[in-house]
Image 1 (spheres, rainbow, N blue to C red):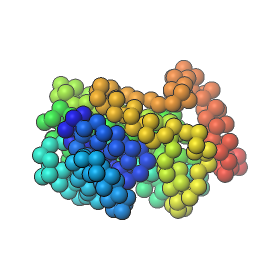
Image 2: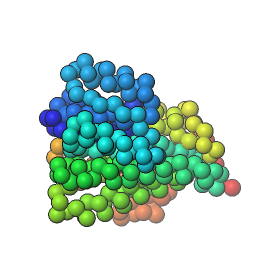
Image 3: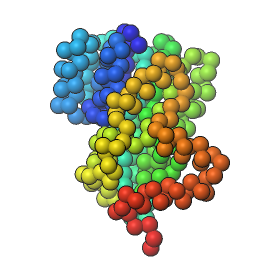
Image 4: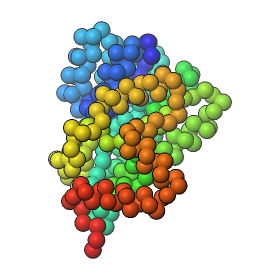
Length: 269
């Protein structure tokens, strides 16, 4: 990773922030992209004090023009792109029968289209460097998660897109990694959208028992370094994906039971 130019969307917090630090510590040059200017500047200062070459670009990935300008600014500053980590994302928590459809659209705009825009404009440069495209997906991209129709749909879409991109470029040495963390300590649940699109402002899980963002970032760094195609994290996540291949109906019930324990969602009419 020495001197590799790495773009990280959603770099202001959680897994994105942890990835920025992990790749910087590994010797990479880092491009920080997100909407929160204050948090990005705080992270930029931390990395700069370490002697890391950093470029901060305020970016709303739902805006195609922002994504295009972010890629252009990276090329102007560094002259190349080696790794694109599509991490920007939001979640939701509401049953489909109750949710305003604008919530699902917002999920797709951020989680799916944001990745598509960034990947589209970065691709020529990544093909030139024989670099890496990384999608931060989720176990919810492998198994539908109750109360997260928009989230699961966006992650399933991401995985289909990235798998196709990989196959299209098998002869071009483009590396495509789909990384699926399980439940991770981050603000994504606190900021998850409710049925009307407002932030939930609380987590239904015991955050201190979850995998840390820093641990996830180290796994992603290792997977990119070794050009792995898939990364599934946590024992629960790996077990869920494995069992779902052979016993999908059984896993439907287990997943429903798991989500019911979170409380707050009334599944039976």
